Length: 374
Image 1: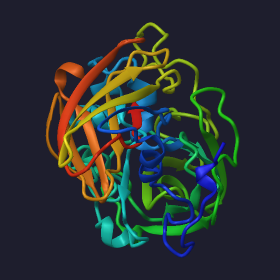
Image 2: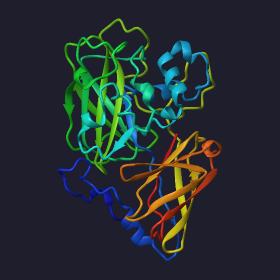
Image 3: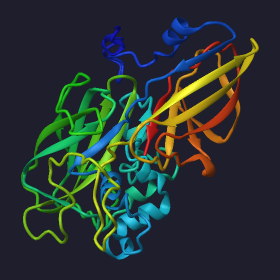
Image 4: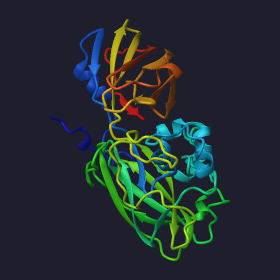
């Protein structure tokens, strides 16, 4: 079996150390004529910081199984505002990334927009930029930062920043000048790290030393994935020292739990990880030479009902999508993305939904899809 992740391109290019674009090769291997069906193995997702939890993952941990509880407004007002702004930011907690940044993170992420990845996805993650009383995790000056690499992307590097002493996380939206770079890991190969108890992928533990700090601070992560020029960002709220104003959201090295929805709702927010969420895409291509109709089936292959999903893929050269039905299409760099419309966002266990699109250009078989459930 060919391990595509081990092929390397120009190592000087961010995200260029391993080939991402398998679509052309896969199409060449599987093309069988004017109509073809390609069954695609799903990616388990992308990832984010889980210890200390990123703002969006923390909101999912605490409220994912109880997100309609009005008590959130009083108990966790920052998460309440984030859920109200766009619930997809929490359902897609593993999708806060940008394509083709080229290593110029400060140009891609303006001041006051760091936590949202420079408003990636429009306003979806915008509420994460708002300063305020975010729940914090208590840490010491030497702590372990844990990222969950769900799809074993690997990393050209992780860069871990912590806000400088004197920064006011309650009132000041994050700027680059507020941060101090404390860790740059360099290259981490796909699969290197700890195996999570469930949910797939790899847990990456990064020791961080942040002396001279007290009170509420923000840990900012840049994760440059190695499979493609794809960069993930996150903000995690921490509390150095004693006097923490609220209970910690998790242990600094907390791992994802088995079932985010099994507990009955209580007055306190329930917690849990996204284990059991999985989906796969099957595409049928009906080509007429200069164009094609592509019908995509999104199937729930996991053990949890899916609330939302996202597909992303790369078209072969010369192919573009002209129109779609039962899905919303968008692009980021060279990546095409599809999200559901209201009626087909939820997929029960063992169920599936479909959408279609017309494309221009020669397409004999489907590209490789990444399916991201939440």
